[in-house]
Image (cartoon, rainbow, N blue to C red; front, side, top):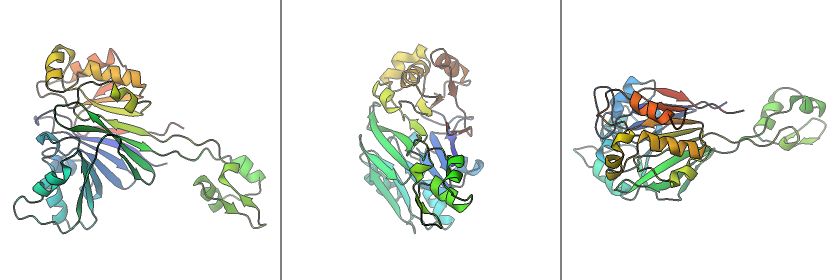
Length: 306
């Protein structure tokens, strides 16, 4: 089973506080770390976590407000100082190519490894072998995108009694069939995976909202997600202010989670005005019980459902 973990490196909104760093979420899958946003201080947070920044293969930026990308220059320079050789891909909305060029022109830094930028827009689907990254536009006053990471369908459950009845010996052939490979027995009989596997099963789905007003489009985008990571900058007493600045309240995020029928809602991008995020969590739970206001360095494992 492929382990899938979410690690919150920064959960503050707009600027860091004593307890919360600027926005950044890491997803660890197998030996790969995928970073969503890279606010100021992200490399320091990585050093304090159990993650290796050298395993970061891709960085996905939601938009170009400083709290979401100013950690890139320090991080890419530190990677070079540690002799990184493999390419780093940085994705974001229109303007990403220009921004990366600007960030890499600061000071006398000249990377010895490839740093490749990619510009994305709504409807983009990126295929990374066994998972997809989907993109939609959200509403935040500047071009902003949300992401979903969705694993591809998995083979169905392996029917061991049926396999044995077909004359398949336990061992490597079992493993090949479970991976979806056709095998040939010593007697020449061909065994297809469909002969010993049940129906295909869905993989896991994680959605990251980025900074946004509460929009109905997010309901469809997050439909049946295992985890929805949604910004909740304010509680509902600041709903008008939240809307004016292109943000969501915890109650609005909870409504989206409920209507999208997600399994779990993780609330982040908490305004520095909140010394205690319990008010954010409590309000969300009035609408959607499985809501959590997350903290820096909090880890959430996303398990397969079957």
